Image (tube, rainbow, N blue to C red; front, side, top):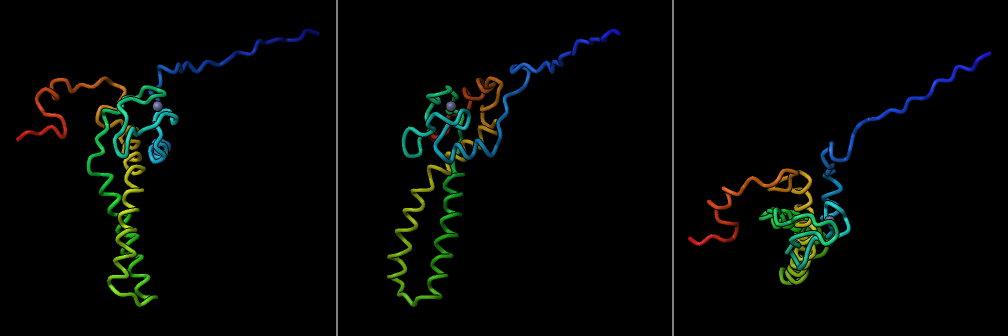
Length: 160
Ligand SMILES: [Zn+2]
């Protein structure tokens, strides 16, 4: 009796890390941004001050000069805080008969505090979104805006 030995063939999928584009899950990138972490690696800090992002991640070196969060974070903060404050005001007004000054003393500080608390995380989330969607030069390809940047002034550098 002869044992028929067949050597098991190993399958090679042939996917080197370079062959595949790096994955950028949207939810993970936004979550890391919300937590003031680099959307790419999740360990480096995203902000060097209140709403000023770092130029490069200290851990992985990802370039964050491409971010163009612009008006999106304040717009989202106004929408969220507006719903909380107006809803809270209308809800408490039904239950407790407070004067206008009492309402103002309650809701004005809550508006300011909530806005300040939310602005940085929401800007981080917006940067995470832009990074995950490869917007504004966050893509794998090198930026092809050399001629563009020469012609157009940088954002915030408008001298009319
Ligand atoms: Zn990083």
